[in-house]
Amino acid sequence: MALTHIALACVPVRDPDKALEFYRDVLGFEVLSDDVLEEDHRWIQLRPVGSLTTIALVTWFPSMPAGSVRGLVLATDDIDADTDALRTRGLDLPTEIESAAWGRWVSFSDPDGNGWVLQGPPTT
Image (cartoon, rainbow, N blue to C red; front, top):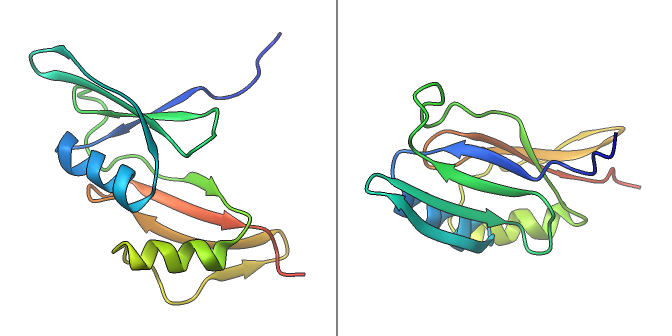
C-alpha cells in the first residue's frame, strides 16, 4: 500500500456562507475552492495554511446532518498564542487549556456544533 495522508474531511454545515466566514476569518484557513456544482450543491474546500489535509463544507449528505462531526484535531506548536488569537477573532474558548503528559488542548465548536480540538505539545 502507498497511503500517504488523509486528503479531505467533510464537515457538514447548515449555512455555507456563515461556515466559510468562520473557517476563513476566525480559524484562518485558506480557501482552495468555492464553486457551485449544481443549483443546491456548493463545493467549498479549505485548509489550514500549508496543510496537506483539507476540509469541504457540505450540506447535501442526509446521513451527515450539520454539526454531527466530532473529534477533528488541529495541531499547533504554540497553543497559548493560538488560543489568544482565536479569542481575539471572536471564538468562545474555555479559559483554561487542559494538560496531560502527551500534550495540551482546548475544545471548541464551529457555528453548527461540529466539534474541534486545538492541540499543542506538552509543557516542558
